[in-house]
Amino acid sequence: MADKLKTAFHGQQSHFEKTMGIKLEWHHLLTEMQTTVLLTIVFLLGIAVLLIVDLIRSKEKENVRTVD
Image 1 (cartoon, rainbow, N blue to C red):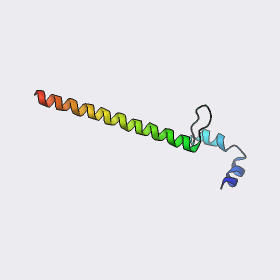
Image 2: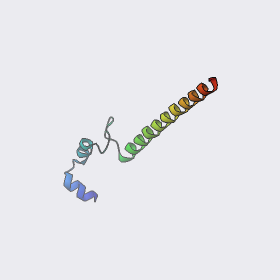
Image 3: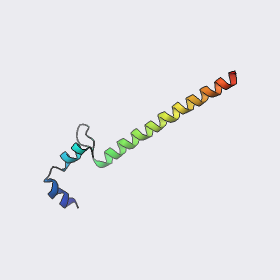
């Protein structure tokens, strides 16, 4: 498959991947593994933030109930 892709893109596969958003570009075009790791970290951090916000809100609701 790699040979067919090289033939189809005439050595411009990285340009296509960058243009279509398949791979991310930092200082250079990231590899597939780097992109996967980066997106996984961002996803996990997002979940952690949501869980912390939910925890804080639930504690605030408990405090309001005990005061009433």
